[in-house]
Image (cartoon, rainbow, N blue to C red; front, side, top):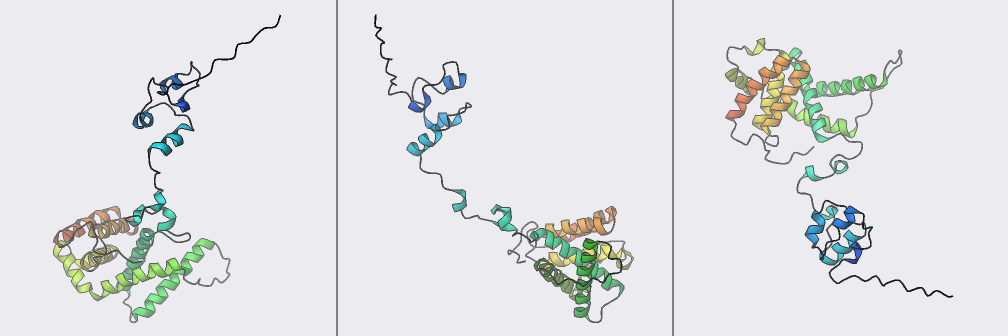
Length: 265
């Protein structure tokens, strides 16, 4: 006797159901959460804690919302919003690191010049930067066992570091008397020449920036000076430098945390 198999019932969905959210295992709790009796709105789908089917989100978004613009099409409003590879090209040091190194080199030269005043500033600067590159090369190479090491040519980072440091060095030397008077006014009961030579030159450098470099926020100059004092002098020197420079900052008639122009370096 032949058996007649009844055709399976047609699987229809009501107009109130989303076809992309049906045909899930009835025992699947997550699927039950995603199958409400009426068609859910887009916000409710996006706010649910349950995972949505992979194909459902593109389908819903393509029908109900305009395409989301790519983040790459938006023009950044500041350099900080650029990706790191755009802010700092490959092989180049970040600007802040270059400026920190430039300030440290400037303090070293000013300290050296305090001990032995240069008769020819340009020649002294050239010698200083050549020795700086040579010492860096020797440190990176390690023991040479008597082998002569040539002074390497300056890199793009070396040139940028020197350009910033030289402007600070020349500015401090040209206005040293004025800078020293500012220090004396705020360092009560302290004789300028009895201060540590490192601290004295760090403060000269920072005060020069605060008074004559409106492209650098005063707070940046102070923070840099304090960190350099802790590195090259003592922790107590950092506190002393910070106290003097904070008094100088209070006399400056410009914002402490913003710069007038974007620095070029």
